[in-house]
Length: 477
Image (cartoon, rainbow, N blue to C red; front, side, top):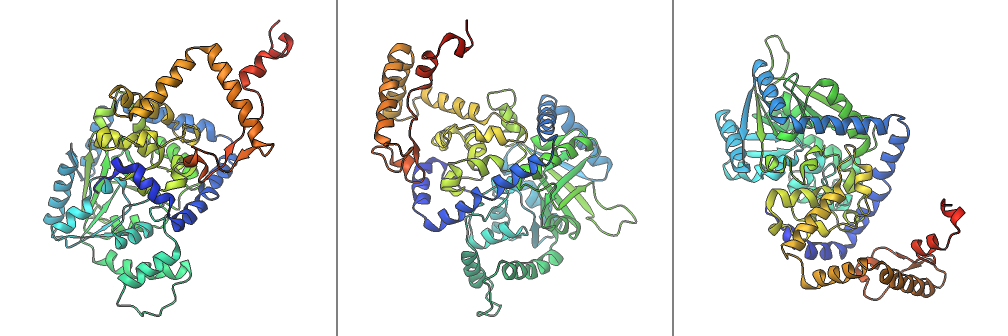
């Protein structure tokens, strides 16, 4: 998809003025985050599993070449083929070639962010092959010609009324006055149409949540079962995955599955967890006759060993989006490209260049909630600060922003002066709040108080209170 990440500020302002989007995003706050919290509390070893998942991904990245070669060898042993692609263009060309070789007119697809990244739908359409998204959310936004707004819930920005209007517009062969007020009716209508597409498809194109080096298997995780129909019914199954999706063993894959669903939707486990290993064998009742894995680099190896190395641990659960105050205010489309939220703000500049995404590292309050909930403990705030530092050094920020940072740095380098002004500011804000505890509106801070209150200081600064303690209270004799 074409990027508008360079226009984040304009995109965000437009999103803030969209009342219908605001209503849709408000539902996010009480949904996925609360479900994640409850799921984590029900599993005593959840934090230990996060450590294990982090260590698995870290180990893989340190030995990526070894595990990728092992994966390819197992795929070939099982009767499949691996295609190595350095760029998005190479991946598009490879997939189209495989579709043409299969004589494909229709390709069913399960949800894949990598597919969005390389714009495979547009490429197939341009060459006369019809791609059909089979995930319900992806199907809806495909009809609307929109990019996904969320990693795991691509149509979260839409109301059921908007979806009903889209179905009436696009499904013109159905009764115009059919009832579509209830979500169940929308689901059944989409299911009826997609059932025919599943049967007619010549090729099934899926992503992969994981690639297992030990067995050459790919792992598909869904709640709808659409990926199972996508890979098993057509004659040819093509898997599109980026290099960092590899894990060493089946046991490692199950460890990551235990934190994936809990972090994403708050489920104990996703409804469908499917392991695909090669084409069908003699005697198998179903499965594809051909099995292809398209392995995509597209900038990943440039991140290895650098400041953003840890970003490659990401398992695409969406937890950082679900808990981010910025994402919950403006939604995914404001970020202007495939990914969004804190992980998108770090990843997008790596993949398309900082010059095309210069505002994204600043699309964060640096509250740290993203790192707190990440199932593989990615230090997202640290990497966002690293991008900001690069921006400042390259003078890619505004003059006003650089002047403000220099002003703050001067006071921060003079502790005595900093404490004087901090005490004055905190004391003034405390009095102005008049005991209300917050500011609903405040001059020069409209960007903050439009959607949320600004907490008022309780009184003195922390340092003032610390220095005001007696020696025995502060723990010093």
